[in-house]
Image 1 (tube, helix red, strand yellow):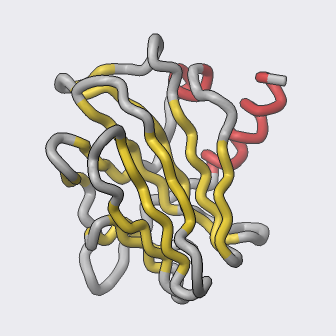
Image 2 (cartoon, helix red, strand yellow):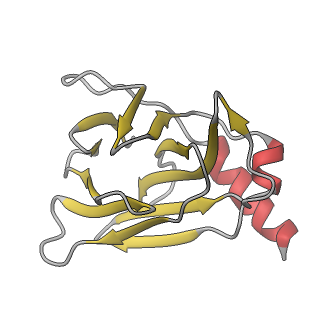
Image 3 (cartoon, helix red, strand yellow):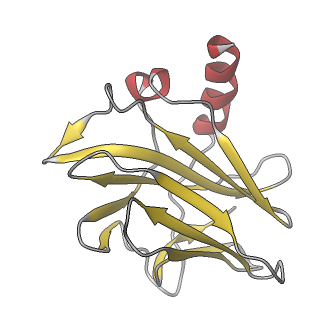
Length: 156
């Protein structure tokens, strides 16, 4: 089962890109709440892939968010922050290049993404990390993705 997941996930990751939106400029790294780091990424290491729990797919309209949480005991720590999750935001279809970002914090916390009820355009989700207040993850009809008013990129 883990092997099938890794093959499917590696195929998905191989198409991940860090698209730039014009305007606004992409924020490559920023902090939400007290100390939760968000960083745009275009790769996931084999170590990270091996230690991911199965993806949780959250859908709203044609938008799909893949929440990939790391095993707490194996999650890498960089600059005093533990990698909690890798999130991919894309749309249904073939040849889609999603926007991806990493979520990290000083200690292990639960990461959740919940779709907001209501209209599907724009697709709005709420991202929460531990006890921090949830922030909006918004996907516009043209594919622009923002998190807490920070531009992450454009789904291609």
